[in-house]
Length: 639
Figure (cartoon, one colour):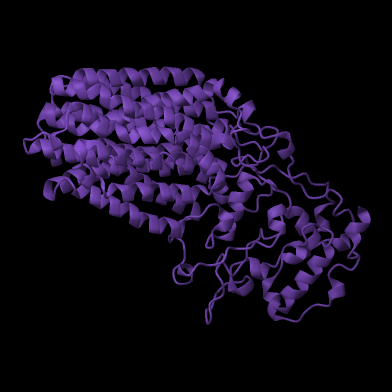
């Protein structure tokens, strides 16, 4: 590798005045032949034209403060030396989104187990555990007592600690407690199981804020909707799987079986989570260099990013912001209908239309199955409308949210007055399916109006939305006991009205633009740019790598545009909400660095087109021939 050694030495001499020192940047060490952070394995033959046999990547030149340093990959864990931490044919950020989706599936599937257990007890002709109506209401709502408490603290926890670890620990802790729920139900007339479910809610309350904390580092601006909705679709897929699976297990084995099954699922999922998911791209040992640079360039970089704290969070301005209240109201209205279906849909089908327990589970999962497919599709459609300038971010959020809420409310009115099982299920399926589009409205709107405080806003809105999960059992348990077959007209009419109110409020007050109070402090608004005087000599003999460096330090250069998504801002740029560069804004697109006026293209010549890795096997060129007219300390003399 003599050619590479000469290239490194001369590059270090030319750019010796730049800080940090370019001598640290060693392509052969920073890019292990396309194997990311993986060390060379003994006897491993690698193919390709790049250093070490890897495929050359044209954008390996220094572009920002982080890439001036050697791209140090984290040390490999023992398991990584035997099994690479990646999913085949899937980028790292989509691997994390998929794993988060499975995590939400398990978390929300656990919430379906209690309703299946109660229906199993009723099916045997006995009152389940001899609980009174009040105790049943307490058991149903107790999870949300704890869930409510940790919503806002969860936002700060996810800002202070690695969000991926918080997310994983919350689900595995809840799953572990889920294993003891069957035993706790037999103690002290339900009081012990209430305590266990409160603890489960405390742990799971941080899941949504932590998920937003993950996307602070992993979601490029033009992929916010699709990544977030892919992860959040697990909430609805969990109901799709949870309702029928809980009914089958309870009917075939016993009411305890769903609790044991989901407890084991959560523990197994956690093992895969800690293996595949990392706090940010720089800490991922197997992420590809192109994906790493794509994510970091799209998000922008800050030299010393700081996380918001209780003191630095603009609470007064936040609580006076109507777009914040629009998200909160929408979250509450959506939570009302969601928890209504999770807790009472099987009871509705059993009492009004005479479905068996397992039949109610399978038929009841159909609306959520359709919604699960709609949610990620809605996210891709929303991103398409924003990216191509068809609609502004504000109009996209309002269209998707109000359209989803309005159609669900309308179809719920049909459910309320339906007299046949077929008509009721058709209307229910259509209503729930349309509500899937709303997830691309209010549920990702936090990232538009205040990306810096997204996890905190998610905790605040989801916490208030959790109140619906507490109110619904108390509001409906009494109605169902007094009139189990005729109360459903009132139940679904009320649900329709709740959604229509949320639709109207969000349509009036929502916004997709970065709010003034969400701007970072003034001391963090310095954006890095290459020194204007670093290269000033117009001598054509100084072309080649110098010209290549100047071209690569331009953030707007089109060398790497993953799926042509990264459109750099200009005077006629389309507004994408909070995508304009704001220092320490984790979802801001990297601003185009200021560049000096360059001589005609003839200055660069063919010598600057890039480094020919095939020369590494040839003779080393004399050191004096690379940059004959540039003294090593040329940059220091200009300061």
